[in-house]
Image 1 (cartoon, rainbow, N blue to C red):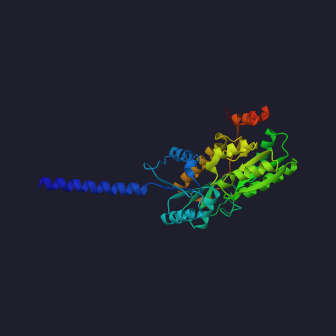
Image 2: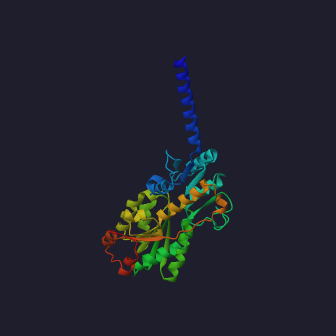
Image 3: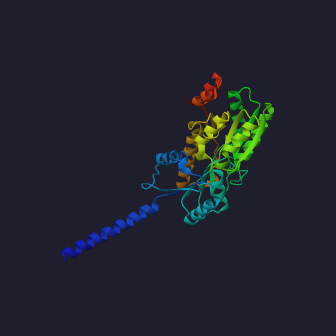
Length: 324
């Protein structure tokens, strides 16, 4: 009798534990991160750190799923359909193609985006102040960054008269940035040669084309298919004597000459903070889209030396990061 009671008590205890585990798992926030490229080849760990700092740790206090479409539009569409069916508590959409696909795919879960240059022009939100639906986030800047990048590269290369702009087709934002660079260049008397890139296999030809037309420097606008070829891009720039300006700090850490753009860590921290507010009950429609406030300039002095360039002291003094 006592043995049967003991067994029933143990079984009841196990059932209660199983139920508590299920309730705890259900209560855990479900966060999905969608990137249109190869997220593991980017500093995505910094987003996980930002979420952890706010109390969201995968497998402990939250369920965090990371998906990368690897630059494949069919895979991106399939991932969006999967996310729409799962209805997570919040989706973090990284890059314009990913966020555009989430919008087109009719995802109803709240979406916080990052690395989208102009979310209003792309129809992601109604306005920055009043997003109006289930999307909000942090813009990656707007196209005017193109002009700023040109100005900084021209300061590093005072005699530059012809500039190549090499840009990946996969990021729709790149075209607007090219137009901004071209406008800024004309006021400085610099001629721009624009060359769209059709993926990694086109890199060598694009750099050869830029050198053939006599470009003295390059602004490189990457995309999903090109980001993991950073070392090859740096080597091609050096081989063709094209000192280059880039959009992401890790491109310069991997050997390219210069970077100017919004601070990625700040973008990730603010995206995590917006996701946290939504998980605590705020509606995306009422959370204004935030714009970057911290911009960084990085210069790789080792690369400058390989090019035989002396960076003006005034420009070096402005750099947030100098790689030696």
